[in-house]
Image (cartoon, rainbow, N blue to C red):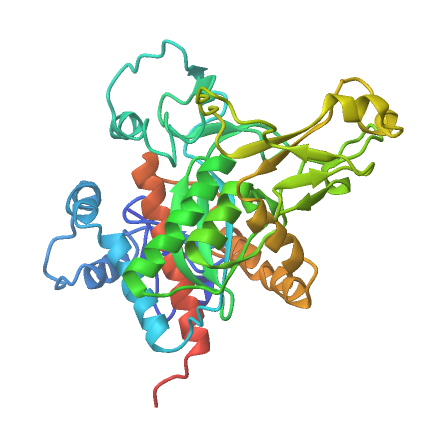
Length: 408
């Protein structure tokens, strides 16, 4: 069982247990791997385990059984993360004004060439990672993140998703999601998900709720990239939480064929109608029906239609709807939140938060380059959760050590 020891700490004899035992804790970019057979390896391990020199060194399986058993049953790593975060809050390192969110892909402990077809797959043996895969099939962060089913699986870690997001080649991976207070770059929450945008967005909203529930911290601004700019997320932030969305709006309404796009139509909120460039109105309904019509399946958008006689004689029809008899416009029920996000994007405060969001990217760079978490050592969603939580805890500890003055 090896110990990671930094080059600069060899004489001071500092280190931490190998990530295969409890996680990844090296603080050096190129850690030295020492063996417990060395002169100080057993002594350091005994010190970490709070044992005397005469006591027997525990076996590797002892650490593994504790990690898979009582550590996870008691949610020890999560408790440790929250304990460190509580100290950061007490020391005033968490401002709570603006929270930044982002996700980063971490390769799983699964070879990309060792894959099987997902359809009709039957595991040869039920491992711990396989059990966790079946348990998370209905989890919004993993199996139920998207209705699209994966085509291939890894037999050793079926919950890991085969993704080509790294551009070079496809790999099995998980995503680590950070919710960061942008004042001092303190991680206020961390969550593992499949490397899918829907799962990452859902995890971001869950983290906002969890931080508010546990610590009572309610951010004024939510800062993210365009992946978090869909209508449902913006509506949740503005209408349900009252948080300013400093997020680019995800808008695909601009047409590329030269015809009028939705921004060319003016919305009249008092009369609930759109006015086209030709001055004609588009309404969501034009007459009252004697029999109640069934509600459409899509309750997130409202369709506004122009009258056929108006479009037939309009001089701008070739620029508006050359291939259809009438023009229609769809409007999201969360369009008010989208308009607010568009107005915020024109302010200087939006520019400032866009620059501040780089702190989240720096935390991911630190995670991979300094802590060396370039791939996972543990398998399954719980293994990813353990490693991501421990890594976030280590980053908060390092930040706290830099920001707080040393005791006299």
